[in-house]
Amino acid sequence: MPLLVWDPFDLIGVLGVLPSQDEFETSHRYSIQQGSLRLELTVWQYDSDVEIQLWEASLPNPIIKYTLLGCPGIRVVEDKRGKFLEFAASNTFTGRYDGYSVIPYGLRLWVDPQIFLEPFSYTTA
Picture 1 (cartoon, rainbow, N blue to C red):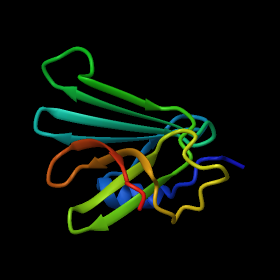
Picture 2 (picture 1 turned 60 degrees about the vertical axis):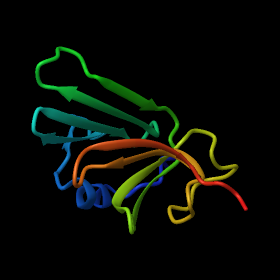
Picture 3 (picture 1 turned 45 degrees about the vertical axis):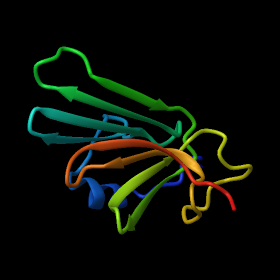
Picture 4 (picture 1 turned 120 degrees about the horizontal axis):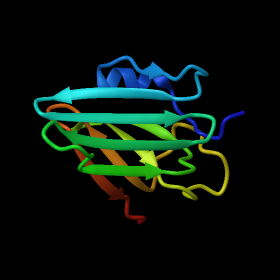
């Protein structure tokens, strides 16, 4: 059973695009175009790896390439800031992520109203 806890349909709802899959269906790639920017989010569900690349049309290489190896979970958050994805950093949980708990630290991704990446950490009380 894969260690990554996620729902591909949740990502479709947030990103607004259907993913492409490789020939062996071991990865999902979501590609979002906004003006001259292209975001590519790839999820290798069986390896629990996630890669985010941000491309600018006039440049030959991505301007951002962020890889989360051993990502335990991806969740959708919808609050007063909008609707976005949270990706848990490796070694975030002592056990398996349940898919519902708050992720204490990792990376956030918005695509509406624009592509925005933000590292985050919730402070403990």
